[in-house]
Image (cartoon, rainbow, N blue to C red; front, side):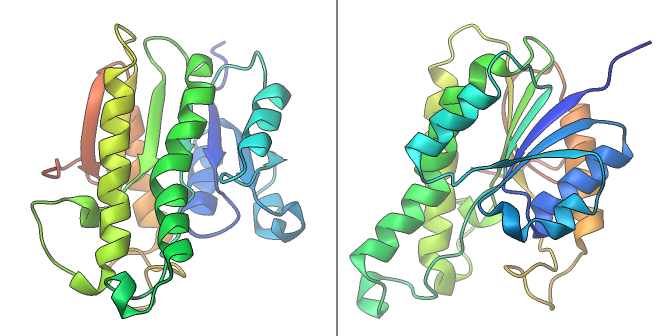
Amino acid sequence: MSTAKTALIIGASRGLGLGLVKTLLADGWQVTATVRNPQNAEALQALGKVRIEKLDLDDQQAVLALSQQLKGEVFDLLFVNAGVKGPDVQTPNGGATMAEVGQLFFTNAVAPINLAERFVGQIRPDTGVLAFMSSVLGSVTMPDAPELALYKASKAALNSMTNSFVTQLGDTRLTVLSLHPGWVKTDMGGEGADIDVETSTRGLVDQVNAFVAKGGHHFINYRGETIPW
């Protein structure tokens, strides 16, 4: 009998992270999911058999504590979903403070890579997948949504940091995905968005399965279409 695949989902209390856990559980995966505040994890707990761990991705000590907690465990999928929209302005002159801009870039671009560096040794060799929740807005070749300039730049920075991280892996045949979930009806995407969480997360998990053992770094959407960097 084949053993269940294992996933570690970072940032799963609501929205796409919660949806990913739901889709993976339905597919028979064993899931460990992190939330910043376990007191606010009712929706996650309601999904049933999911192991919930506390993690604030921005806190280096918390990342270390989680790696101690999960030491020796091997994951078929590590999906880093944590991220923030940041201030709704284009430039610091538009009203964002230096602290807000720094926070946005740290949370969206630097912290995910910090975590990946800590856990990369626990992703299953050859068939494991490391996935980052990116966005088509991080594509430098598609200049739209200027009102989201800072958010876009933070996602472009995540893609760039991911690229640098991948080049440092050497000969490891790890498959790394920078994923665009589509424009989804979440707190961040709003009600006017194109698709629901279920459609997005079904597609995202399908891509994870499709890219198993392919190796390399791919920037794709939930339908498997390549996005230009």
